[in-house]
Length: 382
Ligand code: HSE
Image (cartoon, rainbow, N blue to C red; front, side):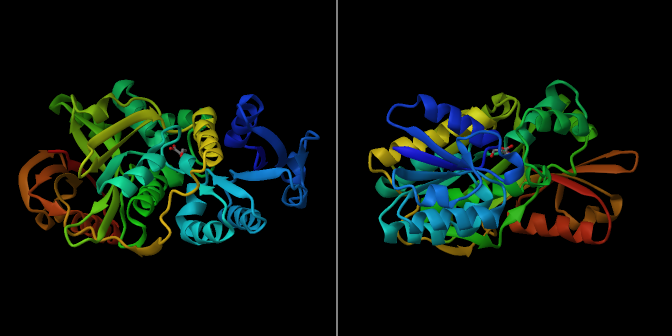
């Protein structure tokens, strides 16, 4: 199968390299912007790809959401399979492109958009068809895991850890998407879309690691706690979906704490299958490209859709999931939280709360910040 590419950045270069060696796949043209044109296998005219009858599939791996969508849509309309690694694009246009692909009788897969190298979405789409997915959760951002791990094990500062993660090619072009939790939130949105046919776009809660300090990490260590950024999605008892991202404190022997560097961990819990955990490279050119290649091989075997035929946007309902939280806050805000333990160091207060609903905890933090004060929180894994 001849495969064209849109984009020749970190992922695109690795995909091209792997296509040259893969069994039954050959690289076609690569669309690049005029300023990046360097070789004859590249083109600056998308029509060279769209009008090439031998090109059966297009891999879309660019950052721009709208352009990525336009390229993907045009390829599907021409009857070509589309594989995307662009989580931001699929988290907006996934349901529409899924519908179009099905109308045109071609594939639309995006395994590399969630979990780097790991076939999380592939496994979830199979589970949806044969089982009942109860929840999916884990470490879905390599950049922040690299940062948290470097701060904890090597004593790096937040800024230095982020700089190295950028140099190693883990971070997004704008790393705000990583540290704010937007990137793992998009991934858990996609996981929900695959598992439940609902892409949650409203009611989501997101807390990244921007408010975390080295002092917090130093406070956790003697207590045997390790902080990880966790994305979680699942089904409530009433059939609605929940989806959120927040830091979580784990006891140091928990599996999440042995996930080092840029690795990711994804855990799905299904009614019949029970729980299944995958650990693997969550970011970087080659690992992400390997998931793109997996999609292409799946297409050759006739596996064409992660999303169910009916997949629509919906709302997340995060009122039912409750956790105890570690909260670092000013004295003025202490009364907002039902505290079970309080520790004071100078004018810094650290408390462990009684169980609070996820949506309530995120709202309390937003209210405090709206008044210009600082707060950090992390759920305490039980
Ligand atoms: N910036 C992303 C991450 C890349 O750090 O996980 C992989 O999706």
